[in-house]
Image (cartoon, rainbow, N blue to C red; front, side, top):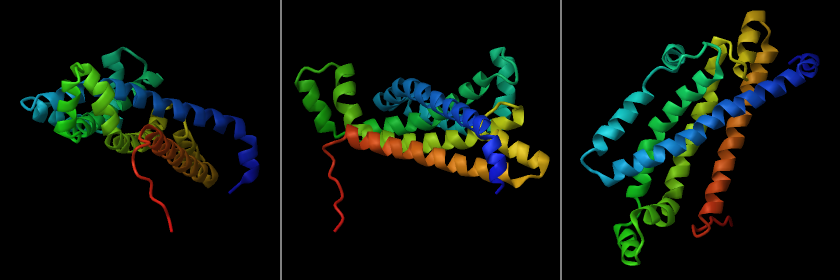
Length: 216
């Protein structure tokens, strides 16, 4: 490791990390917002559930680099526009979370839903006040997979010239200099770990009724 190079490049590296966080989290937030009603619809209708979940699964199999290249002519954006990455990762996030949200809502005991209905809750109130809170652990498990996947996939955008941590990989390969590559790998791992821990913490805060494991 060349620590002198790291010192000179610290400002640029911080900027790349900021872009990486933005490109990873915006698709996650938008993906959750879009996937919630779709997952709820798949949960409510057993007739369309296989089609919705199956279509989401197919979307997730599209190669990411191919999607990055195909989106600019569809969206009318330039190849270096970060919006292409945000839209692509939003598609992957929705594809991943649709099944997760449907499964989370399915995991809520039917008796609990019936009790909420008997108390006069409307369907949207049952969803917001009963089903989603009870399904939080399942949803958070899916979010953990989605956020780690996003952190990894964002790195591929460096092949298109979009600045983020992956730019360190291309710089290292071009210069045959290993310090940027090692730094990029370490930063990606650290960022994925931090975001994963934040979701775990959010899960604990949102589900205070769940039993905590006490170590002996």
